[in-house]
Image 1 (cartoon, rainbow, N blue to C red):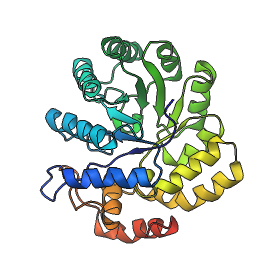
Image 2: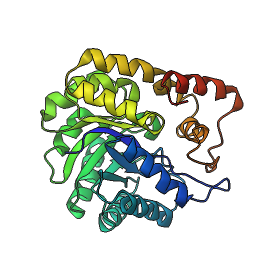
Image 3: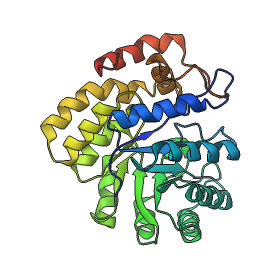
Image 4: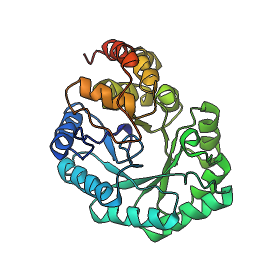
Length: 291
């Protein structure tokens, strides 16, 4: 079972927006050195929306090869077309990903039955562990707990990244699906509480900036040490909040660049972090002791 602090990895880019392969490899080594428990390749934070299919699959392959089995690699393969999601998931399996993360179909607003059929179809088409991903704030599509419960019994569906930020929703999923269906926080602010209630960790934006601290906080919470988990999480709270001061991944790419790991590269229509927020993000980084 994949668990702990799983980084939703940024995709390093040159200033012209091309993928920076050299920095990508260096970033992976940094995360392994800092005890990150797993990597999500080309998720929302990895700018999946603006990488073309060849780039998308190439970045997954490069990450798998660089990690070389040292920690799990989860490939972001969601799409608002079921056929495209199957194709991306199949290609991720071919290059050696350990699992796939599939966001709910965005923009076209499927019904709950449509969501069930979408995920069931992908799971039946590609024999690889698949994690559901519900983030209605970005997709305009909310997968309800009852639908998650229906999917929990489908072969190859092995957990959910729950990113509503609603602890009651996480508890409802846990109640309906039972303790053997992993729940991963998709919202850094609620990670500690989800782990304390039996969740298996987080797929995290904050982990890009403070990977060791996030690993330690998740480990403490999953071990039931509420006091230590809160002490560590208090140091991270500024990052949890301020890395979303503009749309993700704008602030986190600025922060990782501020640490010297990547260049000032991001793809339109996203732009570099507004100057007025530089001090805010810097203060959050200092509070987490990463500067």
